Length: 125
Image 1: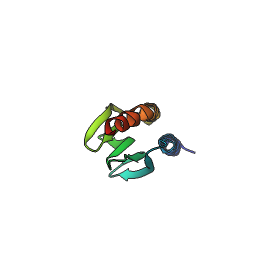
Image 2: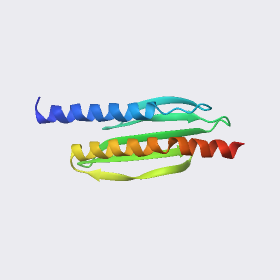
Image 3: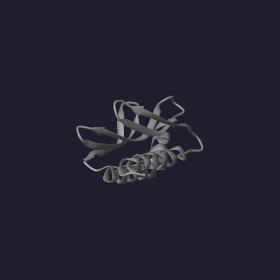
C-alpha cells in the first residue's frame, strides 16, 4: 500500500475503534443505541445515544473532519441542548496526530458515561 492508502486504512481503523468503544456503553436502566454517520464534505461522527426515563436524549460522541488543510477532532456529551462534557476542538495538519486525538477523545467520552448517566438519573428521582 502507498502512504495515502495507509492513511485511509488508519482512519477507518480509528473510526472503528471509536465506534466500538462508544457502542459498548450501556446502563442497566437506560436504553441506548449506537450511531455513526458521515459529515459532509469530509468527516464522520460516531457515538451512542441514551434515552432517559423522562424522554431526554444523552449523546456521547466523537468526530473527525478534514477542513482547510487540517484535521479537526471533537468530543462531547450532551443532554438535549446542554453540554455536559465538551472537549476542545483540536486541529492538526497530520492524520496520524488526528487519529491519536480521536482515540484519546473516545476514551475520555466513554470514561464519563457511567458517572454522567447516574447523575442525570439521580436528578429525575
